[in-house]
Image 1 (cartoon, one colour):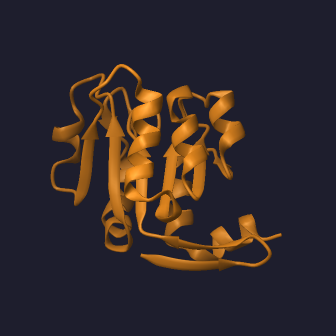
Image 2: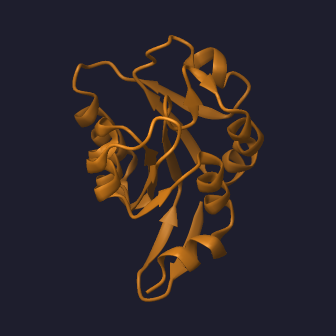
Image 3: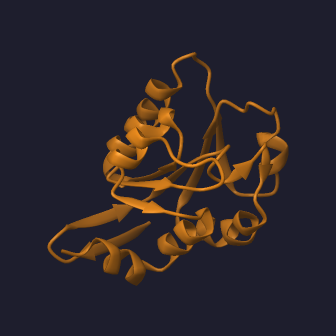
Length: 156
């Protein structure tokens, strides 16, 4: 857990990082190499959750060996299910990261929402609901590991 005081913005007490899988930390069902390199340190600082419809059926195998919670969506309403997942964890302690249209409410609900404009682009509603947008997931994970970068981005 990290407590980060951001001048003239808010104080964040972050415990959970909720990551969308495909389009965010994976491409075509395969975990990105840069994510593999940063994930162990992220897991030392936060409880990391990977949430996905598992379109390619690969998430459990790809996440093997990492200390993460894998949540495979069970309903047809992925948008509502992702948002509810953040609510159950406690939105005041969650960072939500995603790129798809079905990530917009999850990102809106979390105390800190980050939109990734990566290989697949980013759905406009998700971008508009985010506190931060990032061009690359590795940059986002590094931001969460270096609180001074987060402060520099969000301070007013």
